[in-house]
Image (cartoon, rainbow, N blue to C red):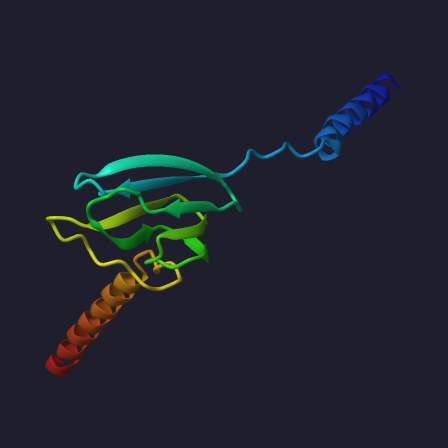
Length: 152
């Protein structure tokens, strides 16, 4: 009888400890913060500032005033949505979907890259490169298999 009670007591204790995590509230997750790095060359030299934007919030970017150079537009790398304005507007409001880099372009001695006029974020990743590699590898395998079949 003592063994039975000891086993029963152990089962009750074990069941209690297993149930505690199931009854506990989920731990709160920290806020997601996106880093927005803004690079400007309005003086002819690159100047970088960094901002933090909470997930789901927006940031308003306005061209630097007082530059002797002509403003060309914005080049944004990373995932984002344009809320208002365009990539050639003096002011643009964007919602970062991850960490992004924004370049404010001016026509200075060295020609900066042309801004993208699209109101959508450019496609990122190496999907096209991966497809090209796979197609090339498949063509190579087919060519080798065909040569072996011709020799046989």
